[in-house]
Length: 262
Ligand code: PGA
Image 1 (cartoon, helix red, strand yellow):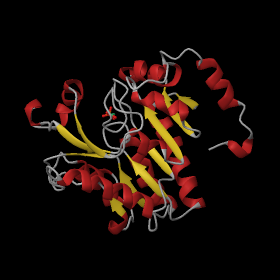
Image 2 (cartoon, protein in one colour):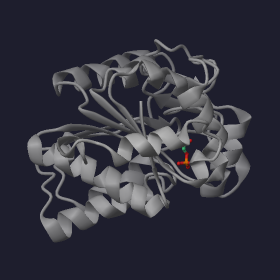
Image 3 (cartoon, rainbow, N blue to C red):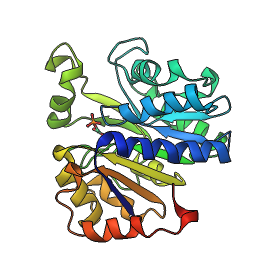
Image 4 (cartoon, rainbow, N blue to C red):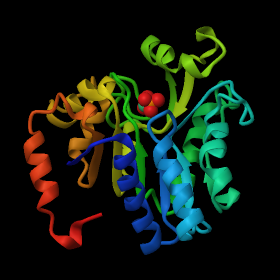
């Protein structure tokens, strides 16, 4: 894991955006795995700026979102489909036929087949080149809550009370937060060629320390990224406060060979 600690979420997000822009310029038909929540908002704002001001071209890019709430239509203001069009897709030249967000409207026994098809679409697109991740305060990635199989694939999951409470701010009231979601699995995420995990604020400090320096355990799903060969962790100083080897992470970043710089 490469841990990149920056002074603020804005600086960190600009760097993460440049990393994605470098990929798209190198590979215009790149496949991106995308996340929702408050964490990637400054990243998406910077990608929009790069599109508008520097001509970053998303015309051939394919995207797959990590997860969606079951029971919410794509047009529902709290759906992740709606989130993505509001905060990113509606402001860049992405081709809607290359945008994949799990449907929140599949039900019952159809869910398993639907999830298999979602994975099949990822394979048909050539696999994910770069997966953007946030991290839950409890170490979840996507909606893979603690205890999720580290080999899991896209499937239905039940949210913990903590995650429902964390996400209640986006809904009219706490009871309105769905209990069930579709999420890419931990095993699905691990197949991405590169993973960029973003974590900002002191509320993420314990999860970041456990994920980066703790044991690999299903109790902290993000810790499995220690087994991924190309993971970058973009953290602000607040999210890095509980890390032990901070000095070394700065040292590595400051002494990178030029060709390795973002
Ligand atoms: P947040 O959520 O970005 O809203 O903090 C992250 C997550 O739960 O994965």
